[in-house]
Length: 340
Image (cartoon, rainbow, N blue to C red; front, top):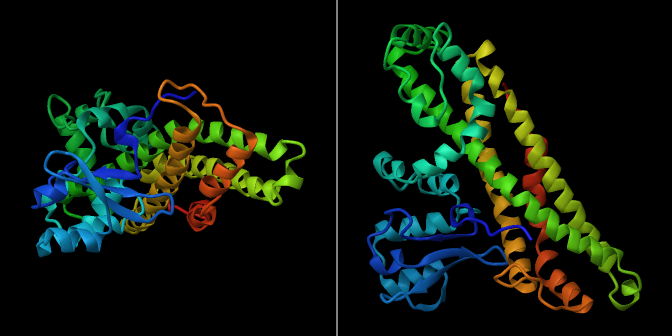
């Protein structure tokens, strides 16, 4: 049995005190959750941390008498199709200042853990910035210190050259690099979460395959083979599509070979769309996997006793339900083109 997922990696729920977003303390002490039907709700808690029930956004606004500030932010968050850090930032972009948005980010420890993934995407950027120096970047934190020390002159020259190619002022290159680094960090994070999720997904699909191949069930449960086949096809399509997208993004290493402002703008706009699709797909499968685990595995990772009939009925009501909702997002990623 695959180990438990870390809370940081859960996309289908978010404690509303994870970041300082709301004035209302009651609201901040609750959490927003995507249910099995993918509808967002607020899981309310009172001041003692005791659950007092599920509420829609409008019910929360009415019961708590939220001010305009909190009302708009709550509706924005609940419109997100995933509650990962980047989807939340995108949802709140029009309702928070830059300084407020800056707090909605991955913890430093998590950013360091992403180094293996970031290295896959950032070699081209680092090669150009550090050309002619003996500087070695071994972590994200050390990237911020490249202008310190004996190599400062060479690094500044390289940055000025990049600024010339982009037709921007040299002081603007810091903003440019920051934006590009944010894209690389986001895709690195999504790939790490996907890599964590895929073994869980394959394990669940293995159980679905056993249902699909079970002899004699078709006569008792008409539609079983077709329904399980749809789930298997969507699962395999998810694995192939996500891996294919990350392989495509690896080409960002060559981004600086022929860099132009137009290429950067095009890539940034494309990837911002892809963020949302990846987040939604991961969130969708996390809900399915979580429900399947809760039903058929105990807290110690041991299988619970269940009959074939119980597994099929649960599969149809939870795993098969709403499978079509990820197809458009999978199609978007499968057809993704990045001008890199």
